[in-house]
Length: 316
Image 1: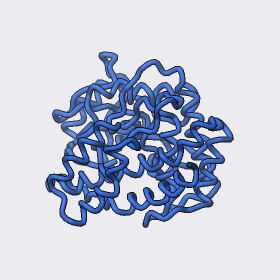
Image 2: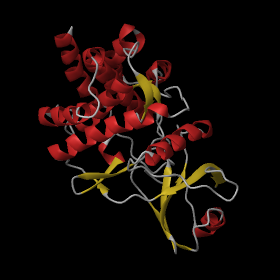
Image 3: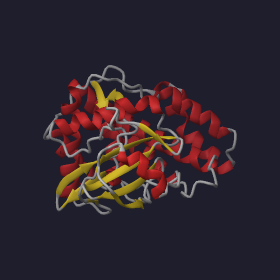
């Protein structure tokens, strides 16, 4: 979460009034994140999240993204329900941006998750995949093979020598046969951004799965590979074997992988490493200085590619 578009209480009050939430008491910026603008809303009827959608989250994708979190919540998962305004719509316009209000979920994300947290996070991801199986909407992956190739080519236009070395490491997974190892695997709605800062805990129990805005229709095992890449490595990009095992064991305790999924997992992990390295490199090379967010270093995420490539070679 982050703040790119400043919103004052005078701006927010007319928008919030359409949701029947009572009188606004406070509007507090939420600083974390890199994609959308988020504020905590406190009213005399409770606490909520106001999100203004920026950048990669286009308005056309919101029925899928908000619908998926609502669907998961209806199945008993700890996900935020979007609220409807007086016209029955969940999405309005605030400060020229598509905007929505969602339930506030309790808890905090774990900066150093224990193995118990890893296991619980894996199990919840599998529960999401099962719960979303009957979700009726579809959305192509916004950072799928074609988008990754486009990001790769755009990064080349500004890359210095060091950046070109990074891009060279990624090239086989972007431009060649390794670019899409999802063919033939079970598909469905996925979160596609299942990082530790998108899962809140109270104690050892998950209490809030948030930020479905990269959600899409893709291979379920690719979602697992993204999550393993997010949860199973240290800040420098080195693997944490215990974390990787705990997360995957948690996932498979709910939804065992098919043999084809298990075989493809290292290649899917390599693609996940490339996907997040590319977006981070792109955001650094094309950083808008008016956005008060520091782009993330792409190099640590690329180090995951080395480990996943080794695992793919062992599986071959």
